[in-house]
Amino acid sequence: MAYPTGMTRKALEHLQTIPAEILAAVARGEIDLNKVARTELALRGLDWSAKWVGFPEAERISNLIPVRGAKGKMIAVSVPE
Image (tube, rainbow, N blue to C red):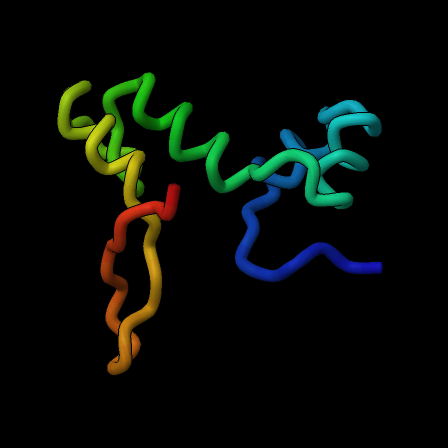
């Protein structure tokens, strides 16, 4: 079985160190890795490109989700409550 394309070797090496219990919870939908990633980036003051934007802006961004618009352009929408 192959990993999804677009992942770097370094990213794959990091994934391979995640405990099986956590991976299983993610696979079952019990952990939303997208939400975890948005939160972690905000806590570091980073945007979705891992660019420093400061903590207030990163927190604002973390409450949005990226979606592909009608013409294929990425846009941000508010996270539903």
